[in-house]
Length: 336
Image (cartoon, rainbow, N blue to C red; front, side, top):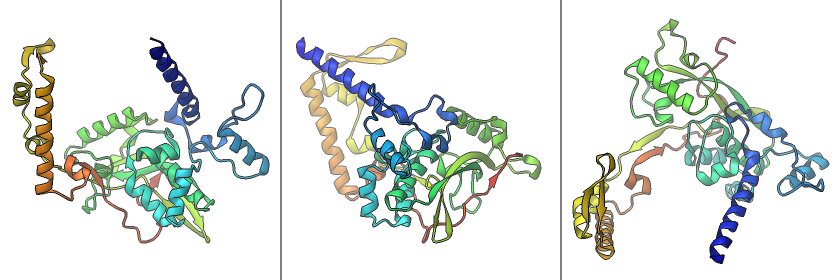
């Protein structure tokens, strides 16, 4: 009993510490936060008035006149090591974020640079924060954020895949505009995008039934008098089918239950439950499935990646030979 109480107290303490560390990264209403607001976070003091934890570094920078970093783009040892490993090359840093960070549609800064890097996913706010942190780690300090309404085609007629369809990994083409626009509105609403959803679609007076206008964030970098416009979160993804795992494992629910000596019985809501399972029989059946899968992979796809085995979206690598000096899609003021 004593050990159980110790474990419970440890879990509560850990949870409290995690909440205390993560709290500055979140806001009361994340759907309406701007990147600028994250650059003006105040130092958190303890009871004696002294700065605590990571805020100590922020306060020291403020006293020395150095730029005060926000929580979103703090350069951690992980990010510094990544920038150093890429020899502080800005194109390589941009390509890393573009090629290795999966896009997730939600609005506002939620993760910051470090968590986006660790989870390998984030929206445009968080991917831009990661890129800014990497650029600053590489001593490119003249970089920042731009925010505006950007016009994205749902399907790009040139077949390049540079469109919403392949950016957000949507499983269909725009064959019916009312259905497509209604579904996009539901995605934007679910992601807490602010705005009046009928304004997301482009004006129809030019018979445009393929364009959505979405609030978006990108990065600007000024170097040697040249301004570069970097949009790391926009990327083309293609679907990989993956293998048929059921066939590769030789899996069958009936044979699995039979091998485990179990009996199927009727359950709530017409579902099925299994009783009287034999652990050793079940373990033996699962080991057989594992052996079948390994043998299949060795015989049919010995060099396949995890994505090629399981299937899903695969990011098409960046093809920029140099940093882009213009945005891929136009911006608009949506009538002011």
